[in-house]
Image (cartoon, rainbow, N blue to C red; front, side):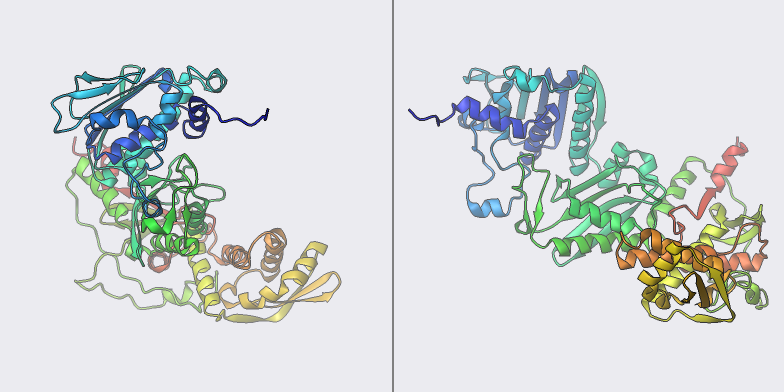
Length: 578
């Protein structure tokens, strides 16, 4: 007699349940998605002991016919797809017909439902009998004692607190994905969330907090049948726990999309920090494959490269917008403060408008010298106040104090100037026009073996950046030219820093990444230093350049370059108006 045999249906369902229902949160996710697919406008979730004892979902959706109740618990029975063409263009969240069958195989499940044309609800009990029941329109699913009949799986469940945290996260993801639906979550008799139907921004603020909403900017773009919308946080607000990507309303964990987001943030994010975002991608369902994994959190794109580039450019455009094209969130944040603390304001004194700095002026010592000699331009009546206002002084030789109609602005002058120089260097390199300043007396220095090795391996990159460095002997290097923008910098220190940077990152990064690292190092050497006293016209010149520079809100290392302290905040500190 052979050893191969067909497994019993119950065992097959229990094996399948191991893929679909990894833990209570997995069952909760599947059931909530079914409620959304039914067209519900209100979904209530009741949990006990983190979902290990009870998961109860109540919705007001379309409901299930009495004749379909038993069929709903059969594997691969569904009302959402019927043909292979339907599978190739899935529009619903669920489609496999496995969730209810898998959950019922490893728990005690009761399902009751009432359609709008039915006089009362019908319930299918644990033993499979369909009986009349009381209940409103919609469907109620109750899952009790999950994994009660599979002790091998039950022992892998964590504590009720841990399982509840996973359930709350699943609830949060689905609630964000459907802001037009009202949700509630109750655990052990206590109400945890009560969410009314809202806008996307309102729902994100409810679930991710006002701090995320205030620090985020709106993303909205479309191209060639793909569109994206949502909120992304500024680089100053980071959290790995606040990363949500939805494709056609479905929460996904996709490496391609995450890489596109990280690449957009790479030039403004500090070290190993993680961007925060809640983004919704809409694409033709036939262009994606959602039938990759039973949990349906992984997808494949038919044109993955095009999707990656679309997401990257949509975010990059918003992150690189100069301050004179500032995101709406800045105005929104200050407006919300104004509404909370209304105080009568004095008119803001207008300072003279300063022209932007010339690109070819050497850095850093004489960067502003020629500007000081320029005649002061009287502001025109129709001229709008610049976003960063006008300088009123300097603090500790490090910070520029400026005022605008919203209050006080504090600028880290070294970090801000560093970004300005960095972006100018990048633009010049992109246009292959980095001005070179030959040294009247070439500088020589004794080089380490690592510096000599870096010059030998990556020396071909240096002329593009405005450098002319050559070996003079096996242990001596000569610097004959540096970028004109950094004319005032110490040539030897600058050359050493560039070679050390090449040695550190050269073998592990792409040519563009190496270039940006080097340019960041150059910008640091070429920017105005702390404890240098600037005149008011010099400060205003820097502020105007910041407003025209991409990504000027962060320095090359991701640190903030400025922040606003609203007048209302100052008034509150001094208890004015009370």
